[in-house]
Image 1 (spheres, rainbow, N blue to C red):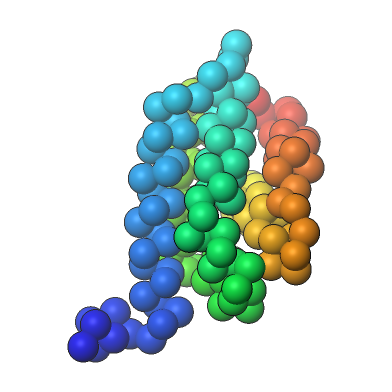
Image 2: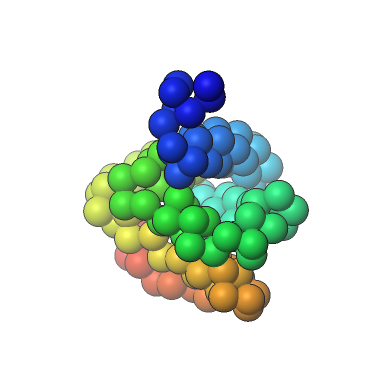
Length: 144
């Protein structure tokens, strides 16, 4: 069966969503806009969050199965978080290659963005993408 290849349901969902995250980050980076490299990197992150939360199957999954969705989306070293860290790193490398951003700072930004995007959805609220953007910008204020 499929589970023999990928493991349990959490692992299957994680792998599928990680693949979608990777593709969405690539498109967000390709279409990012801004006057400076830092603005383009932040725009890529904003686009990523807006597109993923607007994707009906993912949104419905988070609303229907909030515990599983949060477990998969926020797992500390799960495939989705790894894909999102890699995507954000690619955006920074593409738009502000002269800035050397630590893995720890990227981790904080990705966890913050993911939590503010999906936790509200899981409890029946609206994603806080603008708030996530402000917080992430504040993290990088001196770097970008």
